[in-house]
Length: 68
Image: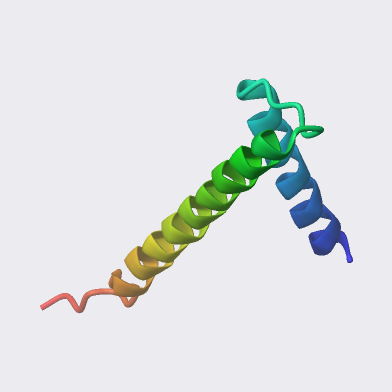
């Protein structure tokens, strides 16, 4: 439950940052469209970066090297 709340807070804070940085008033349809475009782009970058990070971690050598 705590993880869900943390993820939700992260997504909401991200949305608020996008709205404030771009001075968007979500009352207008063109601003709402711009917000959705920016938010989906931000989400794509988050998942892309997470995928790159996980791929890097998986490729690492985790077992100790034999001395010889």
